[in-house]
Figure 1 (cartoon, rainbow, N blue to C red):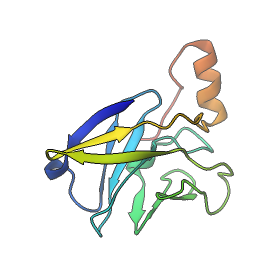
Figure 2: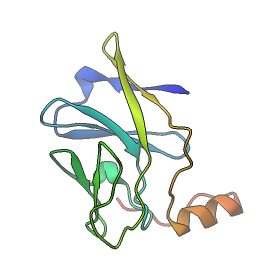
Figure 3: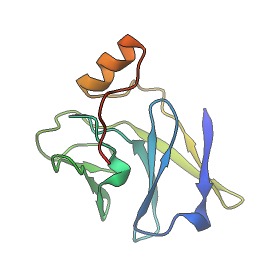
Figure 4: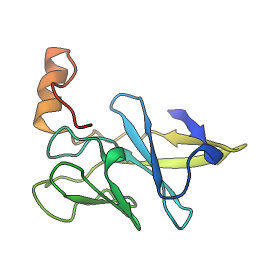
Length: 126
């Protein structure tokens, strides 16, 4: 499934955009001009990676400082242990699109429990 995220002109280099999908996806525009998309939720705890710190091709979780490689989804250190799911990014006519992966997401236990209850996770990170 291909979802429109935002206009390329509206996403400056070094910034991220949160795409409200299920689960949410973060689109990153690196300082080098590359575009990457990963699931927006840290695999350790319910924290928005789009609100983290972008350095090169890595994003640091704003909650407990695990870093994720935007190219592969790999995590570099605890407390996160599982990678985040990556998605394909396309730019067509100046609009950024995200082609969602078919792989299952690696959501943290708090998000999984909330999904099973049919509710939103309690307490996110601002």
